[in-house]
Image 1 (cartoon, one colour):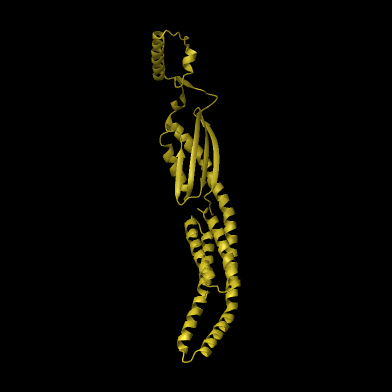
Image 2 (tube, rainbow, N blue to C red; image 1 turned 90 degrees about the horizontal axis):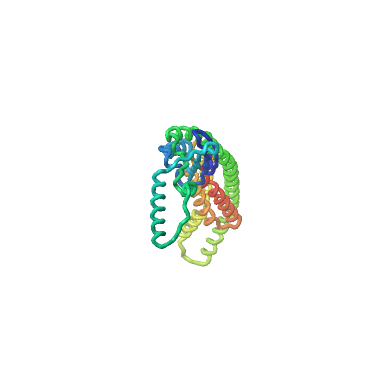
Length: 296
């Protein structure tokens, strides 16, 4: 199944007095770039998530974000004695300085101290990090499945678009072949007329040399090889689109080859109808190249 590099999934979970939400998304990239944002205190979680993603995804800029909180139904707070000691020491210094300056301060209560940042800690980290990691990894599985399904869905739509564009290119190559065949006799007539004018105007001219030059011009104007290569690229594109596994890089390279042959076709056209077909061909190739950038 063809997979796009664009995908999104989210999920929620709750266990061990904690609640969490997942956000998993990706966009196109040259290779696989995984960025993970998870709490530091859950040891080994980032490495485990990277390993799971790497098994399912080959290319793309993938971002994983985990927001982890204590369950609202079980708010657990602990007194941070070290922070309390620092706050009380600071208060004593402030009161002593105020007295030396003749200032009177309002007495502080325990309620005031509790509101000081860091005195009371939300004790989500009291949960066993190993148990939390196990629960999170298990919950991440369905989120990853949904994420891959999202990329597959995008890939299926992308495959339809690319298949249609390959068909367009094939039709335009066939048109180019027809136009090129139709202009052969016209080109031959023009060359014979040019040769006759030169022969009539010059005495003692080397007829063999003129014939060689005309033959060289004919070769330079022949687009048979370009059309044959374009047909080969069309066949290769269809094979890649039907293949299993990541093919984005190969398709991207093939688009460069498509564009090279289309450019040569236009430069050798020497006729308005063939130039028009070549320009249309270049337009479709560029449109396909843009879509290929999203293929895994």
